Length: 476
Image (cartoon, rainbow, N blue to C red; front, side, top):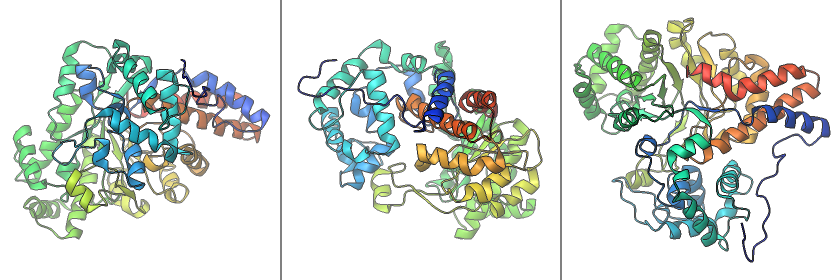
């Protein structure tokens, strides 16, 4: 591609993230060559099912890369850029700025902020491999890159389904709330397209008494499930019905984004009493936390019944900025990691179902101090537990390497579940999986060169970590 006035060169180093010593780098290259083209299993994420159902061209580069991606707009916000100027919609869903080129120019002007971050790796990968861009994004190249990407996005080859196939995605899971009608999944199912897009059951709006509109959400849950959510038994039956509905659209997993990992196993009469308190909009902070804790155990029991994999994503102080939450709503970049206990928190649930061989509970963390001290020992002994990959703020080369270094010695590799990208940014999916595969190959190379692993085992593990473990853990 000609870029007059700008120095053109590859944006990416072919040996990025590999060891610097010759032997280690050579082995990492060899391992990577065997896994780089494996199909992508994306078992947990937040891409929009509307994209696949309607299969319309993405509107413009800004709406593809900037507006939906909190990794990008939170960094810009940290340097004083107004979220409204980036097209981020308000709480009512209305965007102040809708001019994609203006948004892109702001993004390009601040692109230097992403130096050294995983976001920069993902973006450069997308720019170079998808759009053939070989100059660095900046204010000087903003319009040229915008025009190049926009020209590509207008083609049929860049519609969501075509990109899904180009990315070699074997299966992808979206995440929908318990009250979602799954209309886009229904449309996709009826379309006849063969791409595997399944949903995931996320019940936070009806299990967290602090979720906005909780009491009304319970009423709606009763309406759409046909169950009497005025009673605790009816409430649990409503979850059974909704889980079955989600499974009819391919769901194999549930997801729970609680503030903590606390679980409880109350006597039935106490659980019924507690439900009566929170369902009426009452309850002290301690009682509301106890209800969330009880519901994790109840959800685990339901997973024993129906075989759905359970994911627990605790430890985020969500919507930390009250003014931003009031003006713009959820998921606007102001979720902050907190310290998280797992050993004591999970014990009530594990006492109840921890020895169930057919149950899979995948634990995630935003507290890296828990890897070696708590998570690896727990997953290294309880048959129901598996460790999810580094999540969110730790979805980075350094975070992935720290995870392998701290978890492997106690949990091994086979109590982990490979990689999932957990993204809203569609074009970052192959980039994120590429980073994970490179880091795992680098880690395996180090085990071989330091005499702790045989080469044939490293090649087998590279395949397992890149593909097999995720496919099997999520039953895809």
